[in-house]
Amino acid sequence: MEVNPGYKQTEVGVIPEDWDVSPIGELCSCFSGGTPSTSNPRYYGGDIPWITSGDLNSVRIKEVEGRITGEGLANSAAKMINEGTLMLALYGATAGVSAVSEIRAAINQAILAILPKRLGTEFLFQYLRLRKDSYISTFTQGGQPNFSGEIVKSFIIPIPPTKAEQQAIAEALSDADALIESLEQLLIKKRHLKQGAMQDLIREKPRDKVRLLREVSSLKGRIGWQGLKQTEFTGDEDEPFLITGMNFKDGAIRWGEVYHIPEARYEMAPDIQLQPEDVLMTKDGTIGKVLYIDSIPFPGKASLNSHLLLFRPFRGSYNSKYLYYQLGSQRFKDFIELSKSGTTFFGLSQAAVGTYPVLLPPMEEQARIAGTLSDMEAEIAALEEKLTKARQVKQGMMQELLTGRIRLV
View 1 (cartoon, rainbow, N blue to C red):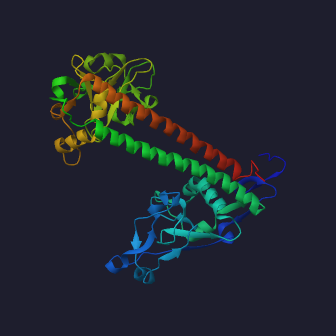
View 2: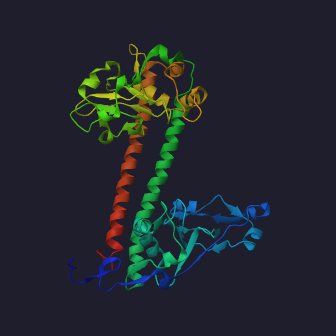
View 3: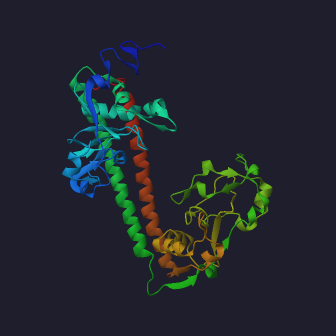
């Protein structure tokens, strides 16, 4: 492969000519911790934060649940780390994940503390995040990556020639992280606000009527699949859609992932031919996932599989969007817990769903509630899109800055 002037080919790919490469073991000191004996209760519940590999899912660790005592620290291989320490998970579900501790804490044996000597901590942290998937694919054994301190020390790292350039790269990427974190926190807040609004709006009030769901709504499902087999599913986009619970995501359908079925199969079950404003719910497996049909893309036809129920109002007896939100409320979730059956595979029968006592405020109130919650959902969706774009931009920045394709100094 031809390398552009001013760049060179190295073990980590093409980098600027004035950059160097070196293994982590030559750039940093590294150590891991240990676990106090779980048979001694005096070792736990103290005031020393204890970081385990599962905690590294947080990019910046500000708090952890685990606590050990000074006695537990003294009588185990657990090691203390200072604020600002870079860590990497050696094994387990988070193997290869790195994080920076913002607290003084002890670490267990599944974590490697990395203390740079000739490289900025933040630069190294960002580079480890960039290469995580590559490391995992290289060192996966037995289905799960399993690193060791020696393996991590062998990782080759590109090194910008000056501390100023390392710092400029690190600051640009840290700013991107800060934006992502602020959007994540705002999303959490907005989701909590929506949940609180649902609790407040969907509760029994003096003017509400309470009716059994079967009295105000049709409940339809595919009866025994009408002999429909999975071998009949097709990817032909001219044929009708077949909706499954796997296609639900946050109350919407991922239409691009939906299978299709032959037109003749669609016509066999007219009761479950979907329409805009229909409400769907999963009744097996992951029970109670709900979906509101805004519209059906080309070819404008869709049916459903045997694990779903379709709700449609009798003679305008309720606002469909309002019912969608009520079926997503804690009130209905509590009803599911009382009504589901099964031991290893839970299900909710159509008859049981029909006995749900649905709250029916006046129609104008239903529309107002649906509108309020829909506006909140739209705001959350816009934030989610903004967060997705911010993560994409950050990933692109990492690829450009950490390999020297773009120079900041």
